[in-house]
Image 1 (cartoon, one colour):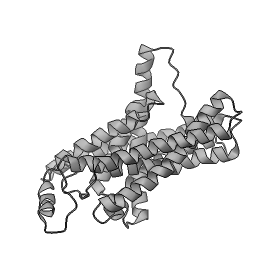
Image 2: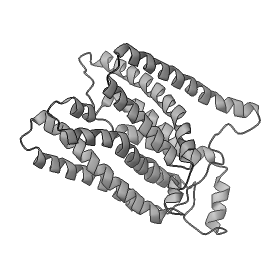
Image 3: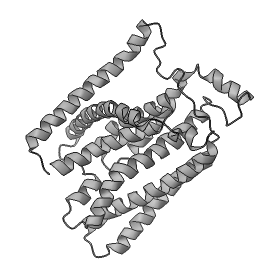
Image 4: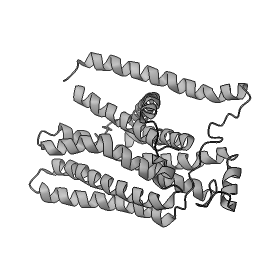
Length: 308
Protein backbone atom coordinates (compact mmCIF):
# COMPACT_ATOMS: atom_id res chain seq x y z
CA UNK A 1 0.00 0.00 0.00
CA UNK A 2 1.56 3.34 -1.01
CA UNK A 3 2.41 5.85 1.70
CA UNK A 4 2.35 9.63 1.24
CA UNK A 5 5.71 10.81 -0.02
CA UNK A 6 6.19 13.13 2.94
CA UNK A 7 5.76 10.23 5.38
CA UNK A 8 8.43 8.20 3.58
CA UNK A 9 10.75 11.21 3.55
CA UNK A 10 10.42 11.69 7.31
CA UNK A 11 10.96 7.99 7.98
CA UNK A 12 13.96 8.05 5.64
CA UNK A 13 15.39 11.08 7.45
CA UNK A 14 14.98 9.33 10.82
CA UNK A 15 16.78 6.23 9.53
CA UNK A 16 19.65 8.34 8.18
CA UNK A 17 20.02 10.30 11.43
CA UNK A 18 20.04 7.07 13.44
CA UNK A 19 22.60 5.58 11.05
CA UNK A 20 24.78 8.68 11.29
CA UNK A 21 24.80 8.46 15.09
CA UNK A 22 25.79 4.79 14.90
CA UNK A 23 28.66 5.66 12.54
CA UNK A 24 29.84 8.38 14.95
CA UNK A 25 29.77 5.96 17.88
CA UNK A 26 31.67 3.34 15.86
CA UNK A 27 34.35 5.89 14.94
CA UNK A 28 34.77 6.84 18.61
CA UNK A 29 35.14 3.24 19.81
CA UNK A 30 38.92 2.99 19.07
CA UNK A 31 39.46 6.10 21.20
CA UNK A 32 37.48 4.54 24.04
CA UNK A 33 39.52 1.35 23.76
CA UNK A 34 42.75 3.33 24.00
CA UNK A 35 41.54 5.27 27.02
CA UNK A 36 40.69 2.01 28.80
CA UNK A 37 44.14 0.56 28.04
CA UNK A 38 43.05 -1.92 25.41
CA UNK A 39 44.22 -2.22 21.83
CA UNK A 40 42.48 0.18 19.48
CA UNK A 41 42.32 -2.50 16.78
CA UNK A 42 38.88 -4.17 16.92
CA UNK A 43 40.20 -7.14 14.93
CA UNK A 44 42.78 -8.11 17.53
CA UNK A 45 41.88 -11.63 18.67
CA UNK A 46 39.04 -11.96 16.18
CA UNK A 47 38.30 -15.58 15.17
CA UNK A 48 40.33 -17.08 12.33
CA UNK A 49 38.93 -19.19 9.51
CA UNK A 50 41.47 -21.91 8.79
CA UNK A 51 41.22 -23.10 5.20
CA UNK A 52 43.17 -24.57 2.30
CA UNK A 53 41.52 -22.59 -0.49
CA UNK A 54 43.43 -22.52 -3.77
CA UNK A 55 43.35 -19.82 -6.48
CA UNK A 56 41.75 -22.36 -8.81
CA UNK A 57 38.83 -22.90 -6.42
CA UNK A 58 38.30 -19.16 -6.03
CA UNK A 59 38.37 -18.54 -9.77
CA UNK A 60 36.11 -21.54 -10.38
CA UNK A 61 33.41 -20.08 -8.13
CA UNK A 62 33.49 -16.74 -9.97
CA UNK A 63 33.58 -18.40 -13.39
CA UNK A 64 30.53 -20.48 -12.48
CA UNK A 65 28.82 -17.25 -11.44
CA UNK A 66 29.60 -15.62 -14.80
CA UNK A 67 28.53 -18.74 -16.71
CA UNK A 68 25.23 -18.73 -14.84
CA UNK A 69 24.62 -15.14 -15.91
CA UNK A 70 25.24 -16.10 -19.54
CA UNK A 71 22.91 -19.11 -19.31
CA UNK A 72 20.15 -17.04 -17.72
CA UNK A 73 20.48 -14.26 -20.30
CA UNK A 74 20.36 -16.80 -23.14
CA UNK A 75 17.22 -18.35 -21.64
CA UNK A 76 15.60 -14.91 -21.41
CA UNK A 77 16.29 -14.29 -25.10
CA UNK A 78 14.52 -17.53 -25.95
CA UNK A 79 11.56 -16.95 -23.63
CA UNK A 80 11.01 -13.30 -24.58
CA UNK A 81 12.02 -13.42 -28.25
CA UNK A 82 9.36 -10.89 -29.29
CA UNK A 83 9.94 -8.33 -26.52
CA UNK A 84 11.17 -4.80 -27.13
CA UNK A 85 14.97 -4.31 -26.92
CA UNK A 86 14.67 -2.24 -23.71
CA UNK A 87 12.49 -4.80 -21.92
CA UNK A 88 14.55 -7.71 -23.17
CA UNK A 89 17.77 -6.15 -21.91
CA UNK A 90 16.34 -5.75 -18.41
CA UNK A 91 14.81 -9.24 -18.35
CA UNK A 92 18.10 -10.75 -19.49
CA UNK A 93 19.75 -9.05 -16.53
CA UNK A 94 17.18 -10.33 -14.04
CA UNK A 95 17.05 -13.93 -15.24
CA UNK A 96 20.82 -14.00 -15.74
CA UNK A 97 21.39 -12.70 -12.21
CA UNK A 98 19.04 -15.23 -10.61
CA UNK A 99 20.61 -18.20 -12.42
CA UNK A 100 24.10 -16.90 -11.59
CA UNK A 101 23.18 -16.46 -7.92
CA UNK A 102 21.80 -19.97 -7.57
CA UNK A 103 24.82 -21.53 -9.30
CA UNK A 104 27.26 -19.42 -7.26
CA UNK A 105 25.63 -20.42 -3.98
CA UNK A 106 25.88 -24.11 -4.89
CA UNK A 107 29.50 -23.77 -6.04
CA UNK A 108 30.69 -21.89 -2.95
CA UNK A 109 28.98 -24.26 -0.53
CA UNK A 110 30.52 -27.27 -2.30
CA UNK A 111 34.03 -25.75 -2.30
CA UNK A 112 33.81 -24.47 1.27
CA UNK A 113 32.63 -27.82 2.63
CA UNK A 114 36.01 -29.32 1.73
CA UNK A 115 38.31 -26.32 2.02
CA UNK A 116 37.50 -24.99 5.51
CA UNK A 117 38.29 -26.63 8.79
CA UNK A 118 34.91 -27.80 10.14
CA UNK A 119 33.39 -27.36 6.67
CA UNK A 120 30.56 -24.86 6.36
CA UNK A 121 30.79 -24.08 10.04
CA UNK A 122 34.37 -22.97 9.46
CA UNK A 123 33.15 -20.74 6.63
CA UNK A 124 30.92 -18.95 9.12
CA UNK A 125 27.60 -20.72 8.62
CA UNK A 126 27.61 -22.69 11.85
CA UNK A 127 24.93 -22.74 14.47
CA UNK A 128 24.39 -19.30 15.93
CA UNK A 129 21.55 -17.48 17.58
CA UNK A 130 19.70 -16.11 14.57
CA UNK A 131 17.69 -13.64 16.66
CA UNK A 132 20.85 -12.15 18.14
CA UNK A 133 22.44 -11.78 14.72
CA UNK A 134 19.28 -10.15 13.37
CA UNK A 135 19.25 -7.61 16.21
CA UNK A 136 22.92 -6.83 15.58
CA UNK A 137 22.25 -6.48 11.85
CA UNK A 138 19.78 -3.59 12.22
CA UNK A 139 22.19 -0.93 13.56
CA UNK A 140 24.90 -1.96 11.10
CA UNK A 141 22.39 -1.73 8.27
CA UNK A 142 21.42 1.78 9.40
CA UNK A 143 25.10 2.74 9.44
CA UNK A 144 25.45 1.39 5.90
CA UNK A 145 22.36 3.26 4.69
CA UNK A 146 23.55 6.59 6.11
CA UNK A 147 27.10 6.23 4.79
CA UNK A 148 26.21 4.99 1.33
CA UNK A 149 23.47 7.59 0.84
CA UNK A 150 25.89 10.40 1.65
CA UNK A 151 28.55 8.98 -0.66
CA UNK A 152 26.08 8.38 -3.49
CA UNK A 153 24.89 11.99 -3.24
CA UNK A 154 28.47 13.32 -3.25
CA UNK A 155 29.38 11.09 -6.21
CA UNK A 156 26.37 12.31 -8.18
CA UNK A 157 27.34 15.92 -7.52
CA UNK A 158 30.94 15.27 -8.57
CA UNK A 159 29.86 13.55 -11.80
CA UNK A 160 27.50 16.42 -12.66
CA UNK A 161 30.35 18.91 -12.27
CA UNK A 162 32.24 17.09 -15.00
CA UNK A 163 29.24 15.98 -17.05
CA UNK A 164 26.22 18.25 -16.43
CA UNK A 165 24.12 16.17 -18.81
CA UNK A 166 24.69 12.96 -16.81
CA UNK A 167 21.52 11.05 -15.92
CA UNK A 168 22.11 8.31 -13.32
CA UNK A 169 21.09 4.96 -14.83
CA UNK A 170 18.44 2.98 -12.97
CA UNK A 171 19.23 -0.46 -11.62
CA UNK A 172 18.01 -3.40 -13.70
CA UNK A 173 15.68 -4.49 -10.91
CA UNK A 174 13.84 -1.17 -10.90
CA UNK A 175 13.79 -1.03 -14.70
CA UNK A 176 12.05 -4.40 -14.63
CA UNK A 177 9.57 -3.42 -11.93
CA UNK A 178 8.70 -0.14 -13.65
CA UNK A 179 8.14 -1.77 -17.05
CA UNK A 180 4.37 -2.38 -17.49
CA UNK A 181 5.14 -5.20 -19.93
CA UNK A 182 7.00 -7.23 -17.26
CA UNK A 183 5.14 -10.48 -16.47
CA UNK A 184 4.24 -11.18 -12.86
CA UNK A 185 6.66 -14.08 -12.42
CA UNK A 186 9.56 -11.87 -13.55
CA UNK A 187 8.59 -9.30 -10.93
CA UNK A 188 8.71 -12.04 -8.30
CA UNK A 189 12.14 -13.10 -9.55
CA UNK A 190 13.37 -9.50 -9.41
CA UNK A 191 12.31 -9.16 -5.75
CA UNK A 192 13.60 -12.63 -4.83
CA UNK A 193 16.93 -12.08 -6.54
CA UNK A 194 17.61 -8.62 -5.11
CA UNK A 195 16.24 -9.24 -1.63
CA UNK A 196 17.41 -12.79 -0.86
CA UNK A 197 19.57 -14.48 -3.49
CA UNK A 198 21.93 -11.56 -4.18
CA UNK A 199 22.86 -10.99 -0.51
CA UNK A 200 23.48 -14.71 0.03
CA UNK A 201 25.45 -15.32 -3.18
CA UNK A 202 27.50 -12.10 -2.99
CA UNK A 203 28.45 -12.65 0.64
CA UNK A 204 29.41 -16.26 -0.07
CA UNK A 205 31.48 -15.24 -3.10
CA UNK A 206 33.10 -12.00 -1.99
CA UNK A 207 33.38 -12.44 1.76
CA UNK A 208 33.24 -16.21 2.25
CA UNK A 209 35.54 -17.32 -0.57
CA UNK A 210 37.50 -14.33 -1.91
CA UNK A 211 38.13 -12.57 1.40
CA UNK A 212 38.99 -15.77 3.24
CA UNK A 213 41.42 -16.76 0.49
CA UNK A 214 43.15 -13.36 0.55
CA UNK A 215 43.48 -13.58 4.33
CA UNK A 216 45.12 -16.95 3.93
CA UNK A 217 47.35 -15.91 1.03
CA UNK A 218 48.51 -12.93 3.10
CA UNK A 219 49.92 -15.43 5.61
CA UNK A 220 47.49 -14.51 8.37
CA UNK A 221 46.03 -17.98 8.78
CA UNK A 222 47.60 -21.33 8.20
CA UNK A 223 46.50 -24.29 6.12
CA UNK A 224 43.92 -26.65 7.53
CA UNK A 225 45.76 -28.76 10.09
CA UNK A 226 45.01 -30.74 13.19
CA UNK A 227 45.22 -29.00 16.62
CA UNK A 228 48.75 -29.02 17.99
CA UNK A 229 50.39 -29.13 14.55
CA UNK A 230 52.94 -26.50 13.44
CA UNK A 231 50.19 -24.84 11.41
CA UNK A 232 47.97 -24.62 14.49
CA UNK A 233 50.83 -23.02 16.42
CA UNK A 234 51.26 -20.56 13.56
CA UNK A 235 47.56 -19.75 13.85
CA UNK A 236 47.92 -18.81 17.51
CA UNK A 237 50.93 -16.58 16.76
CA UNK A 238 49.15 -14.70 14.00
CA UNK A 239 46.42 -13.57 16.36
CA UNK A 240 48.73 -10.70 17.26
CA UNK A 241 48.83 -9.46 13.66
CA UNK A 242 45.24 -8.24 13.47
CA UNK A 243 46.22 -5.07 11.59
CA UNK A 244 47.19 -7.22 8.59
CA UNK A 245 43.62 -8.49 8.38
CA UNK A 246 42.31 -5.10 7.27
CA UNK A 247 43.97 -5.24 3.83
CA UNK A 248 42.08 -8.26 2.39
CA UNK A 249 38.57 -7.01 3.13
CA UNK A 250 39.41 -3.48 1.95
CA UNK A 251 40.65 -4.97 -1.35
CA UNK A 252 37.54 -7.14 -1.61
CA UNK A 253 35.35 -4.12 -0.85
CA UNK A 254 36.89 -2.26 -3.80
CA UNK A 255 36.31 -5.27 -6.09
CA UNK A 256 32.75 -5.61 -4.80
CA UNK A 257 31.97 -1.97 -5.62
CA UNK A 258 33.64 -2.14 -9.03
CA UNK A 259 31.53 -5.19 -9.95
CA UNK A 260 28.43 -2.97 -9.64
CA UNK A 261 29.60 -0.49 -12.28
CA UNK A 262 26.26 -0.80 -14.12
CA UNK A 263 25.26 2.10 -11.85
CA UNK A 264 28.53 4.09 -11.74
CA UNK A 265 27.10 6.74 -9.43
CA UNK A 266 26.84 4.07 -6.71
CA UNK A 267 30.31 2.50 -7.03
CA UNK A 268 32.07 4.51 -4.25
CA UNK A 269 29.12 3.95 -1.92
CA UNK A 270 29.10 0.21 -2.60
CA UNK A 271 32.85 0.02 -2.03
CA UNK A 272 32.26 1.38 1.46
CA UNK A 273 29.36 -1.03 1.98
CA UNK A 274 31.61 -3.91 0.89
CA UNK A 275 34.30 -2.83 3.35
CA UNK A 276 31.70 -2.65 6.14
CA UNK A 277 30.41 -6.15 5.35
CA UNK A 278 33.96 -7.48 5.16
CA UNK A 279 34.78 -5.95 8.53
CA UNK A 280 31.75 -7.61 10.12
CA UNK A 281 32.79 -10.97 8.68
CA UNK A 282 36.36 -10.57 9.87
CA UNK A 283 35.35 -9.33 13.32
CA UNK A 284 32.75 -12.01 14.10
CA UNK A 285 33.85 -14.96 11.97
CA UNK A 286 30.19 -15.40 11.03
CA UNK A 287 28.85 -15.03 7.50
CA UNK A 288 25.29 -14.87 8.82
CA UNK A 289 25.65 -11.30 10.11
CA UNK A 290 26.88 -9.70 6.85
CA UNK A 291 24.24 -11.68 4.91
CA UNK A 292 21.51 -10.27 7.16
CA UNK A 293 22.90 -6.72 6.91
CA UNK A 294 23.03 -7.06 3.12
CA UNK A 295 19.45 -8.38 3.02
CA UNK A 296 18.16 -5.52 5.16
CA UNK A 297 20.07 -2.99 3.05
CA UNK A 298 18.61 -4.29 -0.22
CA UNK A 299 15.23 -4.88 1.37
CA UNK A 300 14.94 -1.25 2.43
CA UNK A 301 15.29 -0.09 -1.19
CA UNK A 302 12.72 -2.64 -2.37
CA UNK A 303 10.31 -1.73 0.43
CA UNK A 304 10.60 1.98 -0.34
CA UNK A 305 9.87 1.23 -3.99
CA UNK A 306 6.78 -0.79 -3.03
CA UNK A 307 5.51 1.90 -0.66
CA UNK A 308 6.11 4.89 -2.92
